[in-house]
Image (cartoon, rainbow, N blue to C red; front, side, top):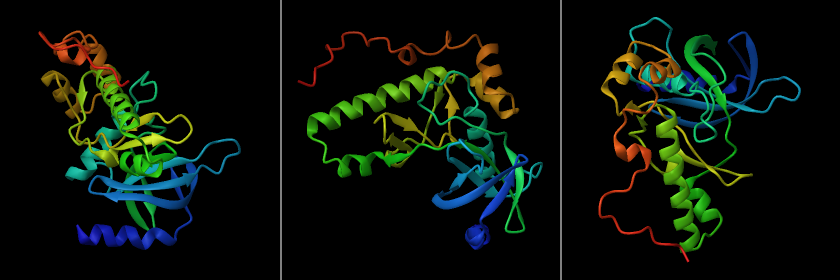
Length: 228
């Protein structure tokens, strides 16, 4: 593991990579985690916004290491149709490319310009009421993403994986590499490499999901309090 990180860090001096026959200029590293390394990149095309590139050392077709498998699954989830904002959109396939003379695998996704949840709360000195309102919005976003991705449960949700977009102040949920479906059949189909949209369609959408996934009220639950 140390060797893999050392190889990648040596690539920090590189300015460009080619992924999916497109050239990207690396601007800065946004983060490093066990699931991969994330770079802010410029597509070098007029009018095209900045993107994020998430990658790991390795080759396509090799026996998948855990991190590589998670990264590929995250890419497939990012292609799910009609997410409507809760999850950054994936902008490429999961592909192999060269970085500093070493093979890497990864993908390009939408870049969410904003701050992780706790940094956002502290930077804006939010009141208790505003914090509760933001927490409500985060819960609604997680629920929306779960339902729209056919019942996918994130399983690695933490403040660093919740980004508040700077212009809309809307939460986005990132790092879906550990996600699993509430439907066992969907997990089997995903593990076989099937596309998320195909999986959801073959299983009839979300009709078979547990009642909690549809936002149904729990029996005898008290009315939701207001934030006044």
